[in-house]
Length: 336
Image (cartoon, rainbow, N blue to C red; front, side, top):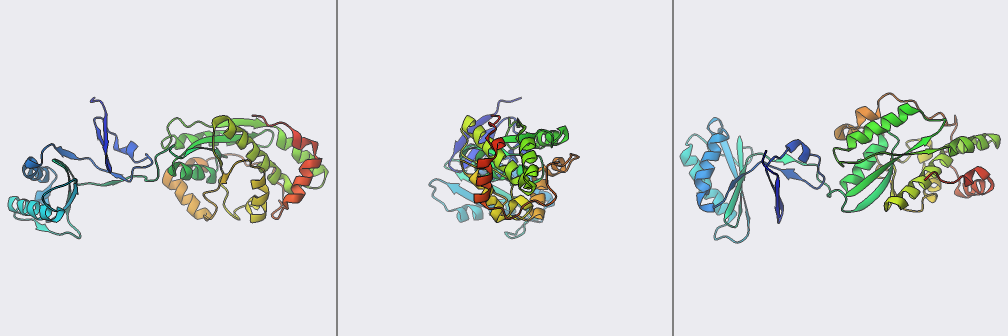
């Protein structure tokens, strides 16, 4: 197996050796890629083109087009070279005609100084920004549909993700954690080595008991999520992350109204990024299917047993802060 060699120059990265196209499709920053034939000297381009056309099935095609790209200084224009090479192809294969709009066969020829590269297929890549160039973010990952998609979207913008699952003792069981681990396993194809960090926390059991006692159970989800933001912030400090990723979408559930998002954001000491904030659920579900997390996110798992029957949708920050100030359980140390 030949050793993989990497060479880069303006606008191109060349890979030589054992290249696996399926892996390239999942690399952020790659807009497209092609398998190319390298012609070391421009003088041999004409013969190489005829051989390439024959091997790649031009004899069964009725029309063709040449796409010429030049990099560097040359004594000819791209159009001049396209006409010249096109005439050579038509002379060698008299049956074929030029069709620049919808050709049966399309051949790309890239001329870089005295070297040439030839290809007939362009495979679409994932695009975005190379992973990690923008820094690191901590993502609150539940294993449901939204949070993995939000994590993936920030990966695409160049952020390395540290996924954190807050295990709410008593209210979530092992099926939820197992689902989150499977989802993060899918994300490994986009960020190799990504691993779910699990944080066990008994805070919710104590705070829910106190809220019920005070007739304020409707605020359970807000207190829980504020706690999660604080845990994520502590993990971010440990790993040097610059923010928190959340899968919240405006108005999707009770805790994600504008009023409640104000309450939640207040608990974060670092920026919170919500890439799904303006997405409809159907859009998020389609993205989950596209990136491969949907099947695992919709796998069998129990739901959170702490959710109240009538959760608050219009909480006031001043009221929540006053409640936290007067409740001893809110002073329970973070588990990280």
